[in-house]
Image 1 (tube, rainbow over the protein chains, first blue to last red):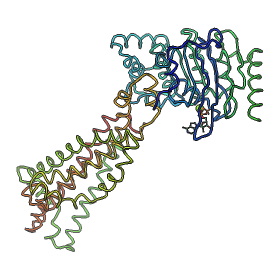
Image 2 (image 1 turned 60 degrees about the horizontal axis):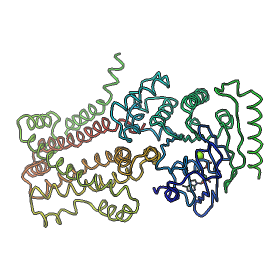
Image 3 (image 1 turned 180 degrees about the vertical axis):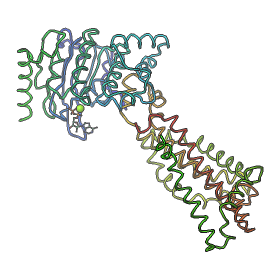
Image 4 (image 1 turned 45 degrees about the vertical axis):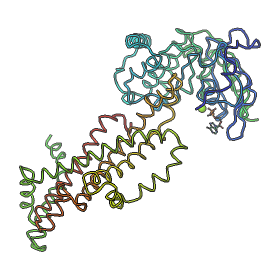
Length: 271
Length: 253
Ligand SMILES: Nc1ncnc2c1ncn2[C@@H]1O[C@H](COP(=O)(O)OP(=O)(O)O)[C@@H](O)[C@H]1O
Ligand SMILES: [Mg+2]
């Protein structure tokens, strides 16, 4: 697949002056159509640094397409994406897929899956081992990482995926509906795990979720998208202190933010 | 406990019944005993043939030819399969050609290969290798083409080059399908080698042995050789399944 062409043109340029202070990712004039049907036309977005931005919107509105374009998995027709003014090539990013079963390498043991991006980066065996041990300690892993992915439960597999994504200390972490294939209990556990990681690392995260509760619970801001052709419907901030916990879900602040999101969403769906 | 032990024996039930039916048929004298010897005589022929007999040397010659043809086929067609499979355009440009030759009975090519390579060892191996390589080629190519895109994307987003993605992901991803090709390929090579041994001026091999036994009407010998060919075919298949399980432990999971 081609790398997104537009980013190369802009290499070396600084973040556009129009971006607010604390912006990490700037998206400018993004165009994308599928089979002549426009999905994004002249799309602009600023994603703040060291925050979690949740992306929420109607099914098929282009949430996955957006993060795939920003992460370089999908080429776009025109536009520019910069990370702190740098191009994607100069930026360390990671991606957690919804379908962990198809994203992990079943021929490698879980621990070797985690080390793989480090090997790609040319790190020595000792460095890989040290980083893997560090991750195991910080995740308080209780299961055997010397097993193969298919020998682990769904939640364990997604945990391994997340560890693999975090191993190279990414500047930005993209997550596309990472918990939607897990049962509710596991989802709750994983949300808090992700929040712990965020608090420990302050990695900029972009989280696509089809679960509004989850989207708001984890977010510093919720990006609400319209139906195609996709625009920003609204960006709803949620400033509740971290760590958030199950009681957060019943707090006034949460209920208000979620209600606001739902309002916007329903307005957009009915349109 | 006993139940489990008995359950382990169920696969043998069919074989025992088969031999028993054979014996019944023999004992009933419905079929000329020259055409259908008793199981005992046939087993004796197998035993004599394998223990210091000529059967074992013919068996080994056929094994050697089959494996040689197979190895040649693998060396040629796995790399080509990977190249073809990694470009849909390239594959569709030769798809017709592959399908055509794959559908052409390889045995129809004997005369052609005879003209080119003469009546020797080379012809038998070449035809078998040709047939097997087409099977391995298109299976490998399909394996590469149908490799899950998510894993390739995962490697790419981690910064793997195109070459690394190919080496670390696509190749392994296509391995189960490549093994299907190798398993059918080796069986196919065996068929071709045996036919070649029967008809193109052979002085050894299981195929030649069957035909000889038929000409001198030595039926126990003939059954013994057919049985040996069966053992070989079954054994090769089993061997490949075991190798596959070891190498592609994640297959189907
Ligand atoms: N490869 C593709 N070819 C054609 N249409 C596509 C392709 N990928 C996505 N689309 C379309 O683009 C829209 C957005 O898809 P997607 O980003 O997956 O939505 P979601 O918001 O549910 O993640 C959908 O209408 C989908 O049908
Ligand atoms: Mg999606």
